[in-house]
Length: 174
Image (cartoon, rainbow, N blue to C red; front, side, top):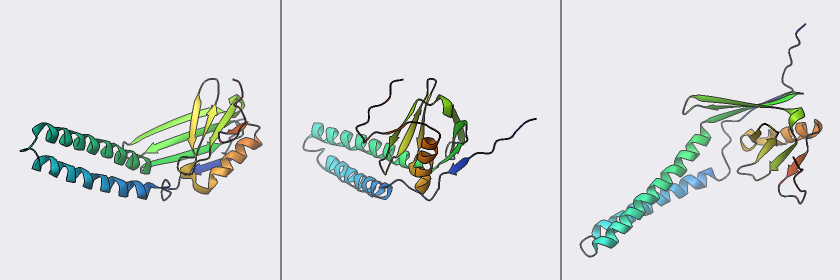
C-alpha cells in the first residue's frame, strides 16, 4: 500500500512583496545615471583642454554605468523569481521558478539530516541556511512575508537546532 504524504506546510512567495528598500534603490539608480550623464557631458566639454583627464572621467562614468546596470539587473531578477517551499515531516523542498530566464531549480534536504540551521533575521534579506553533510540549502524568507516565522517554528518543532546569527550562541560542530 502506497501512502501519499501531503506537504505539512507549502508556502509560495508573494509576488507583491518586494525587498525592503527596493524603491529607494531604483531612485538611487536613476540619480546615479543622471550624475553619470552629467560627468559624460563634463568629459566631452573638457576634451579640448585636457584629453587625458577627459578620457579618464568618461571611462569612470561608463564603468559606473555598468555597475548601475548590474544593480538594476539584480533587482529585476529578484522581482521575477517565485519561491515555493514545501516542508513535510521528513523533508524540505525549495523550488525556484525564474520567469525571466524560464528556468526552474529544485533542492531538497531530509529534515533528519539537518545538523543545524543558520537564521539571518535581517529585514531586507532574511533567510535560513539548512546545513547537512551533503548540502547547504539557503531558503530565502524575505519573499514569504509574514510566513517566515512559520518556517522557523516548523523547523524548531521538528527538533532542528536553529541558530540566530545575531545571538552569541556558537554554531554546532558538524
